[in-house]
Image 1 (tube, rainbow, N blue to C red):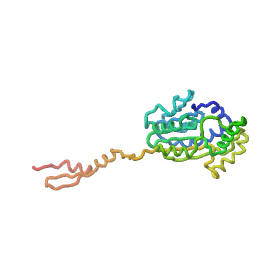
Image 2: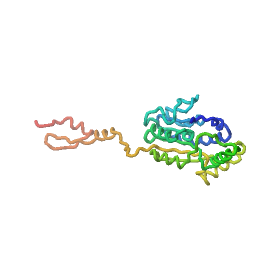
Image 3: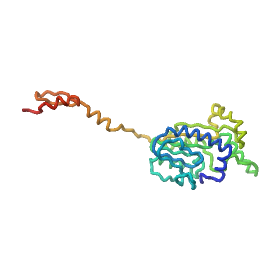
Image 4: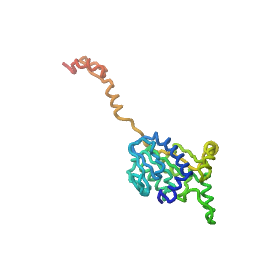
Length: 268
């Protein structure tokens, strides 16, 4: 299944799509700005520009269909990167639009370096938008109704996603949800319900229409070693034992080298 499903770009250009993109851009900017490294990759959804606020020297956009903004076109379950080579991977709705989300997530785990980050956006089935989409599916069985969201991909709940991440050795660092306004297609009506975003963040935070999650790849049993040059420098300044003409032993370090040079060592 492609990330450029028929109807998805058009929906993102609609008032609810712009509302979703505005919220996700804000969350992305806050999350990726302080993630450091050398290589970052965004999978799908070029409209989001998820890596715009990131400062890594190498940033790429990959899609599953040809796209003018994309640096490469590839299957998300077979990325053309060696293992442990990327510091950050961003998946804006890539899992729910993927034909095999399990394989795509396993591939992300493979290419991430230890302690690398993955950022995931997804539509929440336990939300007003999720309920509206489910209801429209029921109505269309009788030939009536219209879907609010594009009929592309499948919802992946937040609890299920966290379970997948845990099995792959990821640790959820932070999560958030947003877009609490009802499933309305009118910009004016969406604006009238802006108060629901403030209320929802406090009253029912897990029921936002979109969730945002940051996870860290943990490698169990890995021990970070201190640089060897620190111990070498300490040993260079350590005192040493010197045997003089009288057979006595004295301690001399770097500061006593001038006093040692004039002495004769050994027996006469």
